[in-house]
Image (cartoon, rainbow, N blue to C red):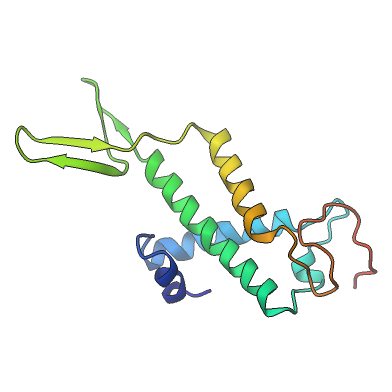
Length: 146
């Protein structure tokens, strides 16, 4: 999926350079998720041949880009020596007496990993590779590869 397609799905996402940077990381997450215990990467061994399956992989990567971008923004908080924080996602601004509210950061790395896992499962559960093997099947690949 190129940046224009991504931006159409997620208009509030990162700019093109941020997308390209995070797309690499999202692709690696998907590749790890579809690699079984025997080291066979199902996307390399037998890429999906069904259009819906191929689209599920692309949309999973796009959703991961957006999730990673949101996590980065939430983690970009800056604590000031006198107390208080700034940065992150602004949720409210008040003009009188200058008040800015920020979204609470995620509950740490465990929550981030859980969100990633759920996103991968949401998009790839039940999706077959080119040989009909579930992309998230973690056991030994049932066909001879290469």
